[in-house]
Image (cartoon, rainbow, N blue to C red):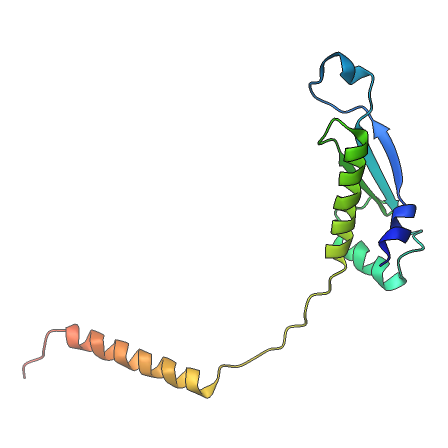
Length: 134
């Protein structure tokens, strides 16, 4: 994954942000919308695209577009930087393949320790009972 190539494929749109802001809020578009077309990306390989489709399926639209918003600050430029950083982190974390689990079995020593512990526990509980007189 080449982040410089991917950043070139991003589309940005500035939108008016919601919430309080006074008189200035109706004139500025500080909220940034990032759109990334996963299907037509040249920077990603086919394997990476399939992996991202699988992992980001809840965040993708029907046309395989990934849309992210940022309106954390009043500055459009800072919002743009934040949404790019969030996008790259999302891609990086989604492209990590989990380690394949190898089934293991307990070692002989751990089995012996467990049986000894169970025997001690059992003896402890037997000694708590009242003695039987015959």
